[in-house]
Image: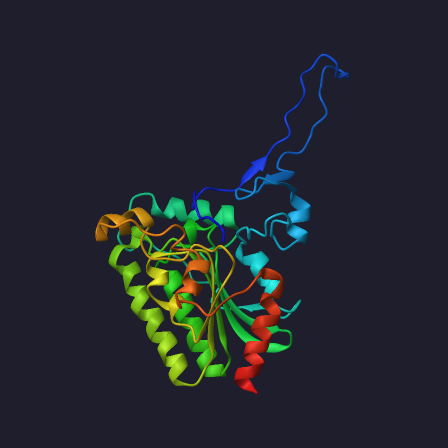
Length: 291
């Protein structure tokens, strides 16, 4: 079991410090430029990993098996057959419905940092030759928080899949509802859940893959409504944080109670699937349903 702590702490990328020792020969008094960020330290086992090796290994620590977070682009490349993915509803733009101060600037900054206009990417393609609509949340954009555009894109993906009679696979990664949009953000919980229910009523398959972290209003809505609920090893899955829960019920909560391993032991999810088996598992589930 992976111990979940420092949940929102970014991975520690090691930098190579320039050696100022007098023993190092200098030419024109200038040290050679050494790129930073070549190595990363696993927060769970302390292993120092070469970044290229980590990416080659699907961003899984080769020492302890810890699954580092993936962005939406990396997730799509991992799951979808090469060249088959087509994005939908990419032109939806976030506005500032409550005139929250600095919200537009925050959206712009996060868009530049993450390389996507919002915290979710939706589209369709093939998984080992099987048609599927996928929804990929991205924690690098405002911690994957769900505002009006995220909720709308998730809802439209379900509606598209229902109309085309295709399965929906949702990769969740979210800190919950987006506070800058207030009640409008909370309304997305009901809207996305209703779209999932309509898809189910039409006989469509819905699979959720819970990744680290899946929390708040996303957990309390479409994340836990899948016909089959999968999770990655060690993923944080819950609603409120441990401290809030303990203060609410006045009791000490078990260690690791919001991990994927704890949830599968208590019947909340169906299976924990490592990243190297995830694509094959999804394709087999799709085949079983539509056989």
